[in-house]
Image 1 (cartoon, helix red, strand yellow):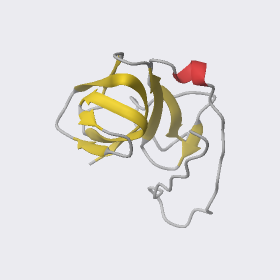
Image 2: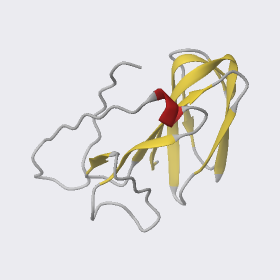
Image 3: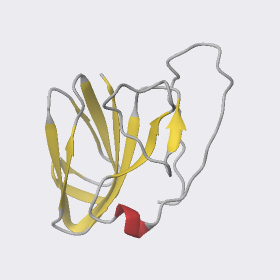
Length: 130
């Protein structure tokens, strides 16, 4: 993945638009879901993910990036009241079955397992209230 631009609506009106950009190594995303975007201070609930190297947003949302080797599985526990959108940037998934460019909305799940296809997958998981 070279560059992905995402716009997330802030939870409060009247904030100045802002932009942040960060790079995350392949190794930091290899076979895990690495948190790359977290709520700014004062915007997330008590169970919101925190990471000093992540981009921040004025919303109770999080984004995770993963680079899964073929046949590997990453698991993620969703926060209570949250769902997610799963995007396959490159490669494919065996579970849920998605090809490159595919996406899935995930709701009413406590935990999800994301299994890469035989050639691996690069994925983004956006966790938000649905």
